[in-house]
Length: 472
Image 1 (tube, rainbow, N blue to C red):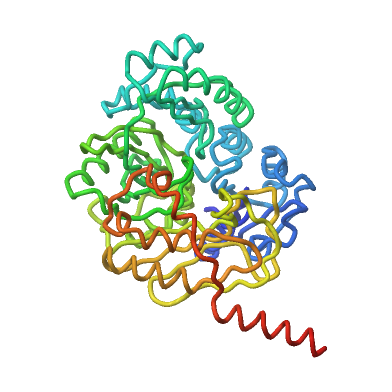
Image 2 (cartoon, rainbow, N blue to C red):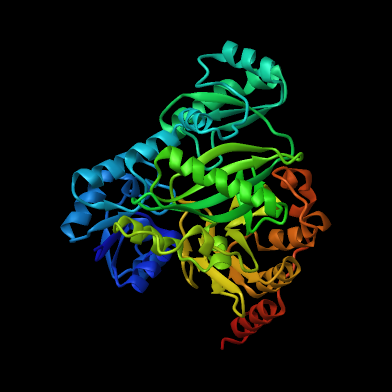
């Protein structure tokens, strides 16, 4: 059995994995660079080890991490999300050196990470795929020819892309010409491969993804869907489960397609099959993410299933402890990614010291974060500082609870997206459950809001000013 696990990641997800380990009686091992010496994941894990001064490179050194896991007596490595989570080299190295990798086999990571290979796999399995190039486009002339056949607008995408990078929407031949070299350059810099493919752009789609779990004994289940349509520049902002835009029939169809996709890929462990759902209800496969997702919390809240613990159980060789018939959705959950960004200044990152932080509480409120009062948010990593997840029995209830929880939470010292989320909650289109991936772009006014400070913060500021004046 897995008795000791190295977390090859940092921040919020590392804290999340450490908590799952604690509940399973597994010793957790954290790693950190100089920038993360005082990070919360270092404090929460059972053991912590320094992996060098390089802020980012330290978390990307496969051999150093595996060597450390072996030296500290670990049985397994969990990659979290980001960094090495979808790098097949880590899975291969773990397998070769006798460490269990908490994730799918390297061959699956490689196949699904190559978007053109993933599309071919799904086509063979009879899963609807967005029209586009059969593989990578060789040059601009071929891209223009394919776009002319399938019709504009088209999406130009990095073949090894992910996280919303290496993607451009092209509404005309002129835009395709303008973006082609730029996307190639982004693909090379971000993913090490200057390869792109083309697919038809679905107007006003809903971004719906399905969580799956698969063990090594051939059992595959889905944990229903999540709606990730509220996003900015292909980066998700708010996620919810179940989707308010999917009926029972479509829900069953998406779940069945996701299970079929997992079987076609030879999948094992936790993964996510992502779809675009058109205004006409048509469903198109987009990609498969071979890792834990940031938004896994909303699925956990409606199903009661701890996905991270299930990942560890599967890596331990255990069978799934439940069947598809056991999976039931209770209520509605919504997650808000609270980023250290300034929405009024084109979402410019706002790194610095957290002068004061307090989490919201009450029924149906969950926070997953890696910040605390006095913590300095380093400028080297993602700007997300905490995830707020709320649950209620129905859609209206979750809207009310979300509004209350966002007003309760306090993150001071840096600008955050909290006011922006509150504005979205006030929007009639959002409240009615009618939105798509273009919602944020169509509503730039939501980033404009009146500056206000809660009374308690004003009182603290006034008291501090008085103390400074009187010398107290």
